[in-house]
Image 1 (tube, rainbow, N blue to C red):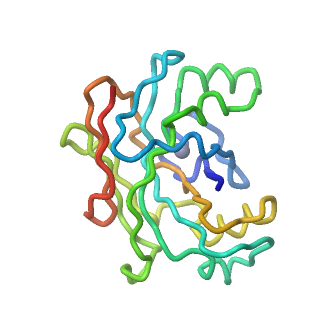
Image 2: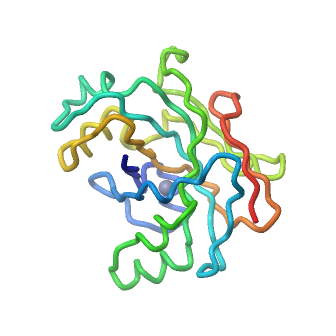
Length: 203
Ligand code: ZN
């Protein structure tokens, strides 16, 4: 399986990192080795002094597809959750400054936290679902899918122009504002519409 990630999908997050507003979705990938194994702590890698959490709504692809039209995109996923796109911000800033690919900063081992999936049928609409990251029991990030620049169905359509989507692939749909460093002993919990879908410890 592959993990496809969207960058810069929320205006307030674009502003906090002083990025340019994109005219098309920003897309990158993580390999399956990036998935943080269940019950494992997230270990801050030695190559970074500034690993940020990015809470994101994630969807799991349930049907093979390419050149998917936006109006049919909803047929390609049944389940939804939240995850963390851990980012070595210091390294990413260096790579970005040189125009180099982001993988070392974004796709390292453990950088993809994938929460427990819920059937999307559980939600009346995916257009305005809320999600939250708590750090040590306090709200660190809050988001609402209504604030996405590109909606889930548009993202699925867009990425399928480039990559065949396969069953089990996961799409990270971008983070809202509030990204910040994690430190050893932090506890991070992810919620979708108030339901807790992951809890991890930082080491
Ligand atoms: Zn992200």
